Image (cartoon, rainbow, N blue to C red; front, side):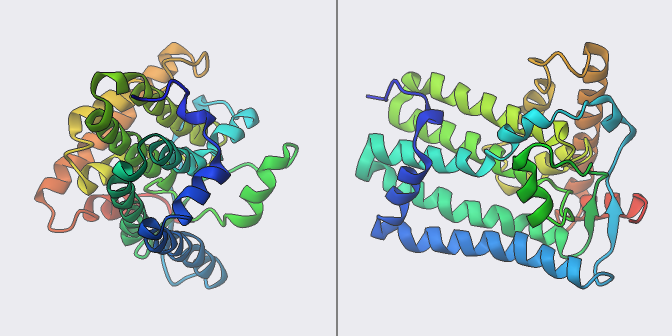
Length: 285
């Protein structure tokens, strides 16, 4: 029977310990961590310290100005890694050995998500006009550790989409209709993190549809166009800012750009071509 506790109450350290404490999962977990460092941190630092080797575009859009800068949202933004680690801990704590195989698949594919995004980053980087803000201490690691060159597609959004879609499917297999509440919790969490990346100006509205397109290409069975449209249509519906009219305009832009990428991707030999063509249209840094 599925636990009544929310997934967001799972202990991240205990979840991490459960994964690394399992001989079945340990190797995959270490490879996933290596993929994250290689394709996000190391590649980004190399680009920052050796500029000019990869073109960099500005991904900003005028609609970004209609989204307020809300520093308080940084806590939600920084939760995106803990978001998927807690899911693993929840599965392993509640289902034990039954959860090992889906956990292994998820860990392996999370590393592949970073590799997928890197297929764009290694050819064309992107940035946004991110305000320098350190009044809130949680902004210190953002400014200190992130050179801010990997915006299109947004890895944060790719990660949370992968998490909620994969665990929704897994929980349904384990718990059937009793999993509905947990699935909704994860869906709402993914929406909140996606909104947070815009509120703290870590990403532009252009970065969101690029991430959605990447995840449709990554596994269309879990994130088909219909699910992507539903996801975009619910952004900012639970927030007071941006206002109703501005929020609707932002959602229309995200959906329009996502549909453009999907249409262009159907005719392209390489899934990255629509994103790379789009980046070439943007002004250079």
